[in-house]
Image (cartoon, rainbow over all chains, first blue to last red; front, side):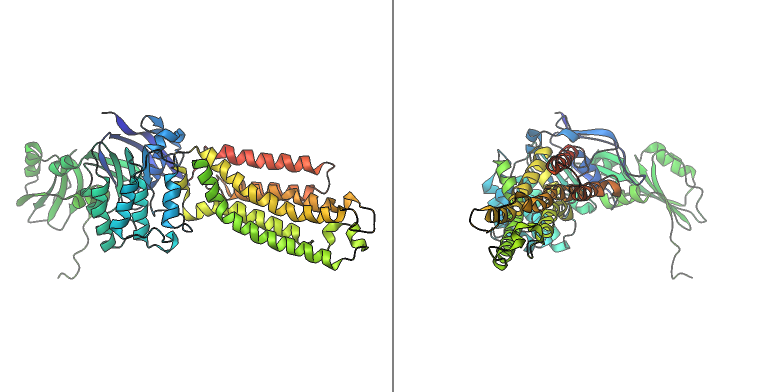
Length: 303
Length: 212
């Protein structure tokens, strides 16, 4: 299986600040890739560069082996891009919008569009401008999957949706987009959304990809190690496996990538009173990578 | 088929604007003519000074600006470039179709009232004085700047120019042209050259600008 999406040293600067900084990305065919990052990490800019909507200052990217800046109509026909905030023409009705989108594609699944509109209770005659954010997201999703794309790029599809709508939308999204052989890039800052959909994770921090691994591998290898001491903890160790460290008054919390015998032995050298190894969920992993090393907050209300 | 769809979509709103402006312009021209007697000297002087006709230029420029900005700045404003430009069509083609759609509305709508006024005055037997083709020259001279205004507003509305000065450059070009048309021997050629430069500039830029 070849790489459907490839980015090499992709960089974009705005006002001297690198929003995306040397991004290296490789998404193989059939992979569902979750691109995570806090707000402003450069996720949308990276995806827009992949789609050729933004010119990179350095580096290059390609879809199906074709330079993103020169995507041909046949390659665009194989790709669907769900932009953040779900831009649609507000003065059109759903019927007009669907008919407009449909005219571009040789392949269009009318049945699927109808089923999605029915599922969400959308009326073909409704004007786009009168739809809620959630309903516009639903229309956008229907229009994106109607082309039966081989590559689906979703840029924060649940952004701006209230929790109830988001949950319903996500439930449907998982059913609709999952298809054997389809490559999906799903960007989000809401980890629960991504965790249910993707099989590989990339965490973008300050424009650079800090993590790019299968989700299962990430969960398998990352551990939180809690060391308690009877006194202030010793200096934070400088292990290569260390992802982040959190110092408390008498404890040291370390997030370690690859907990094994050697790291265990190194931890014991610190002479802790107790040592506890805890599994981490995606949210904790994300915070460990994004938050980095921080000092503990003062214990409010104590004393 | 996609080209027809894009053209139809781009024409939808400008056509409504154009229809409103055309009705207003024709009404103004009819009103101006109804105020003039057949032997009125006003009909044989500079037609652009006729009361009611004197605002035609302003209305034409306003239409050109509104249509140009609607076609490009409108997409920028609603973030819908991403929707349009990720369809399987060449970007240059999309921009060319947008340009064409606006031109199909702006040029006839602004030229028709002048042509009708000019024709009415020139029509044999409509006036007691000999017809002087120069009487409509100022009107046509003013009209020559309308395509450039349209193209300048269209270009200005395109997203992500490198600098503010660059963004306003097309508008400055149209303003210089409008001023300069009164001083050159062959205003038609000058207007054509400026308009062609603006159109080619917009099309060339379509392939390499930031649309996000």
